[in-house]
Figure 1 (cartoon, rainbow, N blue to C red):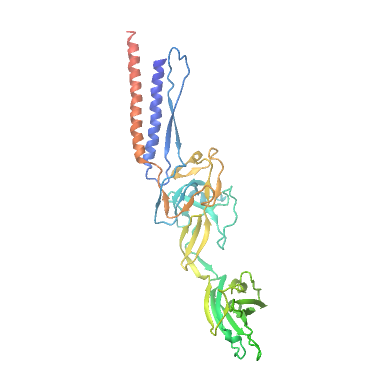
Figure 2 (spheres, rainbow, N blue to C red; figure 1 turned 90 degrees about the vertical axis):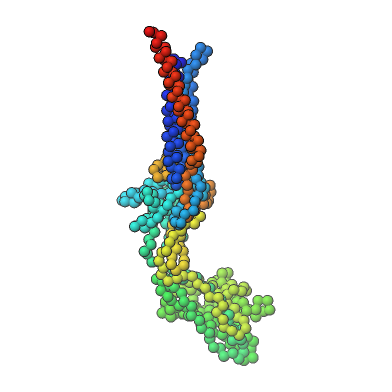
Length: 436
């Protein structure tokens, strides 16, 4: 029994070391595979309890392998903005390109730590092996709705429509103009000052707001009024008046020249807390900033010059897509040729309590299992997850030098177990020869 148990132990040793050799071979073969996670093999002894007072029965060894998914490889820089990696804990949600042809809209979600995503002929952001990046679509204005974080049902394939034009209408305008103080004094001619400011409409067309500033001149012998009437007409509304306001300026020593009050004659009301007027123009609203009363930076009345000091606005003509980039929070920004950007998707980071419990699949992808625990979708960089890095890929977590060292050790152990089998065979042959 003791000799035969030695033979069985030698066989188990061969099997265990063959298992380790397979893992080492896999690791070395994938040492240059982006996102590959090292396979680790551990040995465990088998103990057989017999009558140890008279003899010893060998139990043997068994091998157990586990993929160390929580080990991260180093990140390297690339030239592709949609080469994406996670700088820390967490996974990217992906699906297979074949799932996009389904009729029910259900996408099997898999996880990956890195990927080189590029748009295909249909604009789908995918890897060469067919892994499609998934994310939450943004609304038209670039905001991300509130999506459930314990469900992947709201995730959609990220699609980049590079041939589509988009509008970028003006919705904010800042007016910093100095009005001449001498025009509101006794004896002034009361001539108005005019200014036209271009803005962009909802369809990318060029429109304009025409401002007329008329000084309120005092009666003869009366002090300066420091007051003006501002009339605004809109070309998109058929040059109709969209607002008329009476502006009064401070003449004190400490706050001379700043706005004191704005009285609405017609149009939307002035908000003194923000210094803005929500102008209703053709097809939308422009937040017109003329300054907070008592503060500098907006409309002023100083000296004897009419000077448009600072006039700024957002918006642009119709624009086409130039490129896309992902930021550290997982927001995918579309960059347009008119110089503005807009969020089109948010890519969440998936986290599970036990990453090593995930089920490994082809192409460095993983699936949720009971051993991994429930998943949760985080914003990149929040909670336990790492930030999202564009222009980056994660290298393999394999240390080739360490694997080669382990390979030599495994080879020696395998040869030693083979020697044990050879020795037992010779001993059994000697036992057989005793009968002759």
